[in-house]
Structures are given as C-alpha cells and as structure tokens.
Amino acid sequence: MELKNTVIGIEFGSTRIKAVMLDRDHTPIASGSYEWENRFENGYWTYSSEEIVTGLQTCYKELKKEVKEKCGMELTETGAIGISAMMHGYLPFDKDGNQLAAFRTWRNITTGEAAAKLTELFQFNIPQRWSIAHVYQAILNKEDHVAKIDYLTTLAGYIHWKLSGERVCGIGEASGIIPVDETTKDYNEEMIRAFDKLIEPDGLPWKIRDILPKVLMAGENAGFLTEEGARFLDPEGTLKAGIPLAPCEGDAGTGMTATNSVRVNTGNVSAGTSDFAMLVTDKKLNVHTEIDMVTTPDGMPVAMVHCNNCTSDINAWVDLFEEFAKMIGASVDKGDLYTLLFNKAMEGDAAGGGLMNYNYFSGESITNLDEGRPLFTRALNCDFSLANFMRTQIMSSLATLKIGLDILTLEEKVTVDKLYGHGGLFKTPGVGQTLLSAAIGAPVSVMETAGEGGPYGMALLCAYMLWKEDGESLPDYLDHKVFARAPSSTVLADEKDREGFAAFLEIYRKGLAIERAAVENI
Image 1 (spheres, helix red, strand yellow):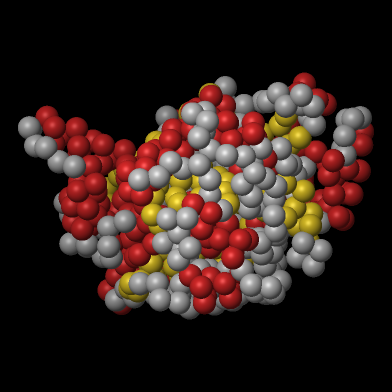
Image 2 (image 1 turned 180 degrees about the vertical axis):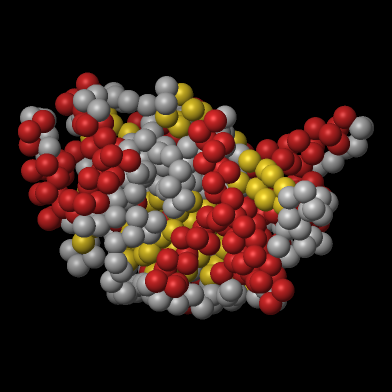
C-alpha cells in the first residue's frame, strides 16, 4: 500500500473520538477510537482539555496499530488529514495560546438572552450553541476573560490549529460561528459590523472578525502538519510533518458528506447522542427559532433541525438491562443486547401501547425547555411490555426532531423525497430506519458505509481536496467517484406505522407539560 494514496479523517463525536483511514478507492482500511462522555461542571456541559488530547492521541494510536497489523507498515505519512468535531460551542484563547474558559459544548442551554438579542439584531436565527451567542453571553455576563480573547474557535478549529498552526475553518463549521454570506462564501459582513457596533460600549480591545478563524471552502488547502503538530498527534514520533490538511468541519458537514447529501434537495438525519436533520435547499426561508441555517462544506444553504437529546436515554436503559443480565448470570455482548432490544421494538404496538417517554438529559430549544429530566410514564390501561417499552424509547428519540421537521415541511413547504440516515440509531438494520420513516412519511436510506459516520465523511473531504479534477464540484465528486456503486438499503414505513407514530406524537406534545413539571420540581 502506498501511504500517500490514503487519507485520514478524525472526528470528535459526543461519545467517541474516531479515526478512519481510506485508500484511493475511498474504502475504509483501518480505524481507531476512544470512548468519552461530557461532564456537567460549574454550570456547563464540557470536556476537559486533558481528555481532548488523551482521546486524540489514543484514537490515533489505535489507528496506527491497526495499519501495522493489517498492512505490515508503520504509519509514517498519509496523503491528507482532516479534523471534524461536534459543531460550534465556545473555546477562547489568549495571545499566548492559553485556554481562557472551559470548553462550552453544543449541549449548553445557557445563552438564551444573547441568542434572542442577536436573532433580533441580525433578523436571522442564532441558536444558543453557536459561538457568537456564547461570546456575547460572556460579554453580557461580564466575564473577566472576554477582554483577553485573541482567538475564538470551535473544537474542530482548535485541533486543526494545534496540528497546523493555521487559524482556519471550513465554511460549514464557520456558518455556526457567525452566519455566512452564501454569495461571498465568508462571514456575513453586515452582521459582523452590526455585532461590532453592538459591543462598542463594552470597550473590548478586539473586533469580532479579528478573533475568528478564516473561512475556507471544501477542496482548498488548509495548511500542513507541523513538527509540533505531528508530535501532538503522534507522541511516539513516527508520523512525519508536512502532510496537507483539509479544512476542518463540524459533524453536520461530515455527516452530509458521508451520506452524499450535499446537493440541493438532498437531506440526511444523524442520530446519536444528539440528532439533527439537514435539508439542502435553495429556498429562502422565514426566520424560525427552531430552524438553523448553516451550509454544506461547499457553501450551499442548509436548513437544519437540531435536537440536543437522542440516544442517551436509550443507552442508560440498555445499561440497566445489561446489569440485570449480569446479575442473573447471563453473559451478553453489549452490541448483541442493543440488537435484541431494537428488534423487539418492532413487535410493539405502532403507537407505543399507552407508554410515553421523554429522553431529555438536557434542555431542548424546539420545545422551549432550558433543562431536561429523563422521564418515563404510562397510562393505567397501557400494554406494559418490553416490545412497547423499547418502541416508545426509539420513537421518543425522534419525536422532537419530527416537531422541528414539521415546520420545514408544513409551514415552509420544503419537500422531503428521501433522507439518508447515519449514526448509532441505525446500527440495527431496519429498526431506526423504519421508525424514522414512520415519523417523516418518506423513505429512509442507509448506506453500508454509514456506520463509519463523520470521520468517514471527513476523510472523503480530504480525498476531494487531493484527488478532484479541475472544476469538479463536491456533489459531482461524491456522485461519480465515491457513491456511484455504494450499497444501500431503503425502507418506507407502512401506513400502520405512520399512523402509529402520528398518534404517539399527539400524546407526546400534550405530555410535555409533565416534562416541564419534572424540570421545575425534580
């Protein structure tokens, strides 16, 4: 194998850091991973800077080991490297590169005042997790560190900076820092000026553009791995400097790429710790606080429905079932347990049999909740079975997403012909697909490579940078060079399942009052 004919994508997901290496045919040939989990500390959901570094190096070390085992080669070089991460959030640094505040992730619902004021100022929805909302909230809070900010970036931007020394960001990730202009492919200049004028009375020593990463498009070179960056990634000293880096992206952009959903009128759903739907559109939409407008990695507008909660509650229940299995002396593989329980859900009543679940570990802006409390309840005359319990869990994980999608499809008349699914919810064949299809009333496709997820998408963006032809667009490259013969499965839920999900959602909406009461009293 010629190492220069490979690419490596690394993604910092919510529960796992994963690296994937592809060959010249875009086939995954090696991977490595590191499990981690966010913590709630001092009022914020965060990951420590120490674990960020440990996770990256452990993940890369596993990849390196697998290359050695499978190919009999030391991983000394590669064609390109790309970094992706959970999108947006807040990572500020001073002029000496010192981190000024704990990493504030997408999961935080702490910037409501700032997000509302900026949405009004820009006449453009600014979600609470966006970087501009975080920095403005810090200004409103009069946090001491704000005056010292020399660089404000996201997790993907931070790792890219450490590897290359370059303060840059892919346009998809940048569009969640502050809105971008789809014509100039850069931050929206009117909003930049409006923000600077807004904070003038605070007397800060910086202008907002001066502290943000430069915006790059998919296919552009984003710098090279430095000697310092090579040791940051590979402390063992095997990896050589000088490797090109692709523009870093958020997990939204890599998810679109991994599912070939970057062309207008395509879409995808990512379902893991959080879930979000991305619909690429050329329509100008009204301002909705439930709908985020971001871009594809090549700068096309995307309507995004983002939910903070998806599979965390399912994971907690599976852990409980695993504990019970061990208690009675049953040895069961965790992956097999998920498969058993997910398949059991398909035996349940289409509407959940009178059971109801709210999977809110954190707040949800779509349903106007600043905090969450995981909650399971049931009617007195319910059919309380394992099948109905698991079906309710999975439908609950998709319910908030469906509420947001209804705004796009019913109010904005955005057409959903088919969606591609990827992420942990779709690992058990047919189950997550069928219930998502029941929710949206349209076919859902899952590609065989979808299990590789965001790091696979980031690796494809590396491949596009290296191997595209002159003038070849990202959609064309993916259509013709990557996915032309990619195996996939498509599921369309039957009428009974669609009617069942609609009935479940009607009760779910009414029962949100229970969730609000739980937040207030527990």
